[in-house]
Length: 130
View 1 (cartoon, rainbow, N blue to C red):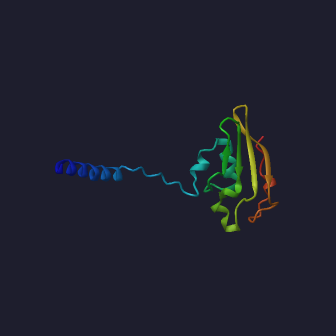
View 2: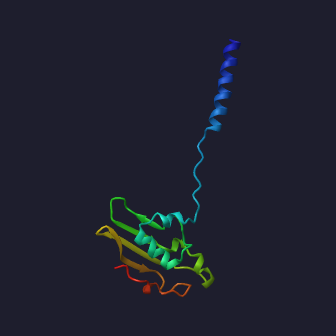
């Protein structure tokens, strides 16, 4: 009986120690990331970088889409523009929708909450995509 108790205790301790070392570690997902912009289709990525600069970083849910749809929605309030920070801010309040037509994405709808941004950029003067 003592031998069974000793073996079961040994398996309990050894099994617990192995499980503690084998636990998964979640990947690090930073709040702001350039990778979220890099994964966008080329046409959309080009428009974002032309509006915000080459060092733009996107937050979670900056670009949202339905996998069964051909539309991508961008929320510029979740975009950080370090190149524009010296002017007092970035492009905020702009919401854009891009739709895939003939194999490429084109801007179909733009809406903004604020007429001008703190940086003084009039988002209505962004170059058209067509």
